[in-house]
Length: 265
Image (cartoon, rainbow, N blue to C red):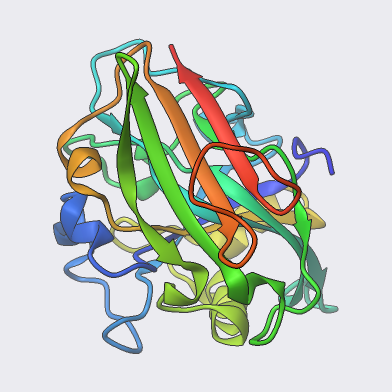
């Protein structure tokens, strides 16, 4: 589906240790969650038609453009869901019909003094990256196609390939399947503008109640290289979802594997 009319939302803190490694845990110190391992909240990275910087279409495919100013940018390897948004008569989100998944690079700058997560998430075209294909979801529940998938990521620098994020099963997400879906619907309707978080329902209204959403569901923990190295021009990014019974966690394409490959400029 074309994504320029699709709202882009991300989940913060849905994989153990990621926020600590990214130096962002303090941002959420006053955000209360229902459970200790619950995600911290959701944030916008693309608001179609919006007058702010978030209205600039930011999702690239084969290139990742660093900010024009000096910034510490890191890959955030994630799974993204393609969803139909169903509203009730009061224009509250009633349901999310989760249709397909792909890989995603929720590239983030480590920006001191940013008041909102979204300020670190988009700085122009090709700020993000999306995989080379979608895999249809038979059911967003245990026993479905996503059970068998893992997510891994690499950075190629000066001809050498480095693991960037840890290799992780999708079942390792803190909130996943029905629990994640219910949590997303609740946050889309009721999350308040507080601390680093924003009122998502007001964004939905400002965007004319979009019918579709692209939701990135959280970044994995970093491998040692990813935790210690920021992106440079000339790097190559790989974010890969692979079927554990059919594929190897490498760069070779297959029918069941999703590969995001971006050159950094």
